[in-house]
Image 1: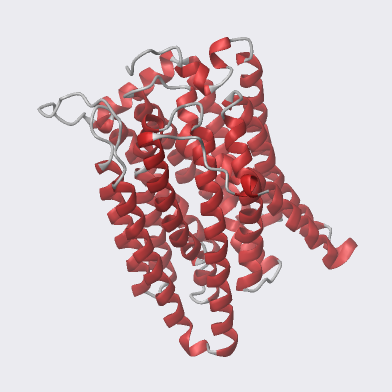
Image 2: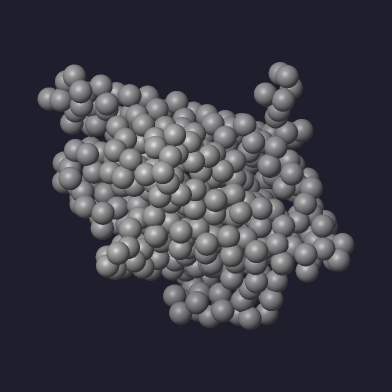
Amino acid sequence: MVGWFFRSPPLTGNALRTYRYHLQYALFDAVTGGVIATAPFIAIKQMGAPDWQLGLKLVLSGLGMLATLYLSHWMAVRSKMPFVFWPGLMCVVTTGAMALTDNSFVFLFFSGLGLMFNTITRPAVAAIVRSNYPPEHRGQATGEIRRWSSLVFLFVVLGSAVLLDYCTKHDSDRILTAIRVLLVLATISNLLAYVQFRRIHVEEEIQKLASVARPRVVRSFVEALEILQRDSRYRSYILGCFAFGFAAATYVSYIPAFLSQNLRFSYVQCVVYLHVIPAVAAFLVTGRLGRWFDRVSLSTAWGWIRFGWGLDPLLLAASTALIPLAGKEVVLLAILARIAVGTVQGGYWILWWQIGVAFYARPGADTSRYQGVLVFVDGMTKMTAPFLGAWILAMPGSSRETLFLIGGAGVLLSGVVSLIQGRYERGDLHLVTTAEYEAQFEEPI
């Protein structure tokens, strides 16, 4: 039992050292994330934010993702750590700025700006994870880290909600003070996270190109198009990611409003449904998913991850549609919906942001380039899909449930695309696992 609960990956040397600092970074980051997760509810309940402002966070993160296409080509033959640490410090600043306002638009703007800078770090993080962990244990290492960070996130987000609910009911004059204290805690924890990550010694072969100028913006777009043109397997992967990201981004911003207004939940109830239930499920299964990722084709893994993700909006829509027939007991469907997304949430995160690109890009400089293309495409979905969601909500006779049904169907379709790709790749011995794929390359390219 203890071996299952504390199951560290079999790492040695710098890989083990990386794991320890990576874990510390993730735990501090989870504290920040747990506080920031209450931001939409704070904006709705304390600042009167309208629905359209809830998509602001995704739109701003999308801007950061568009910028990563250029940055990922810039960092390809350079040290990756500065591309994590300096945007990370900007994320710290924006988190602190949230404590200085009680205007819902400004509050959500800084929240989105922080996510934008956090997003900018992710191609570099993916490259560092790939260079510092052996492929045979990369999924297990990142899965365990995500597992424990989900547990910290759970306690912080729940504690934040309890504090906010208490102040709302018993000490309403101090609610803004409580919010600011939480945001200061998030800011300090965010700073500690990036300080710890910077202590990682990155095992990378950097070409001595200090005299080479930064790539032109246009050239970074051209190189991205060349990657998609020459690599049909990666092109299929990107197609599936685009379908998944676009469909999910149409509805995800409106789940807080659905819980707060459709189901009339308190802070604690909203946080339990939106974050705590998925975090518990993620803690229980993400470690196992990480070990599974080391043994299977990641295309096939993506198919099942997206299937669990798509069940969430479909079951949420059904939960309110059936209330007139079955009463409050139908809220159990909402619980099942959040369990469904929670079981795959950690797996989605480590595939999308940390280890998935290693199944498609050659080791070396292509890691950040390929991840940059993925993040750019994700940014395009987040810049456009929330507006489609808002347009659907504005249509006569439409509702949040309608939007959930449309978005959920799109997510399931993207899962089918991934399963088809996995079936097509099954006959190639080099594509059985990520380790088999990387074994083709004797040296980083």
